[in-house]
Amino acid sequence: MAIKNVVALKTIVIKEVLRFSRIWVQTILPPAITMTLYFVIFGKLIGSQISKMDGFEYIEYIVPGLILMSVITNSYANVVSSFFSAKFQGHIEEMLVSPTPGYIILLGFITGGLCRGLAVGSVVMLVSFFFVDFRVHSVLVTIFVLLLTSILFSLAGFINAIYAKSFDDISIVPSFVLTPLIYLGGVFYSVNMLSEFWQAVSLANPILYMVNAFRFGLLGVSDIDLTLALSMVFAFTVALFGFCLYLLNKGVGIRA
Image (spheres, rainbow, N blue to C red):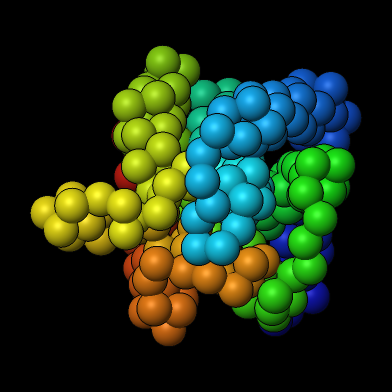
């Protein structure tokens, strides 16, 4: 990678990180408080009335899903809001007419989403230790799934920002698509509890594979074969990266 591209990437990443870290009271603290409420309400109060799942207390079972939920929503939110703001304010055009390659611009925004997703996920994981006591089953799988998931939803946020024409458009997908997929992705239950028909339907939900792969990394249990889950997450990530790069290079939603 040429020195000028390294400088460009570093500049975009620093801008993106400073963008959310300067207002950490709005970007990092609220998700941590929200997840704490999930732990208290679903884990302690409701979870105490629910039998064990796969040999774990209910609160232990939902911890991986709650951590991943925070990573997904914050990675997505960071990129969709940042790139749409750049498009709305017009300074994304300055990047596009510069010698900076499209993949460098894309990597810069993705890295910003990755940093915010991992920052919030780390805070939520630390909070979880106040409620549960568990050892990480596989550090390698845990880190790999966290990184891939954060990158994947940073890319998804990028696509939303590309096609969005107003600030209202960047809230439609999280509200009507992302949230239902998360809640139906096995965060709060085992997919084996469903009927065969709904188990089959659930397999079309990409978040199911991420949640189960991450649950295996933390607890060592999964409703989905680990190799299949990791392969699906990796395939989705590569496909979305290629699509995002195509949209950016074509100037879709940016150039008249």
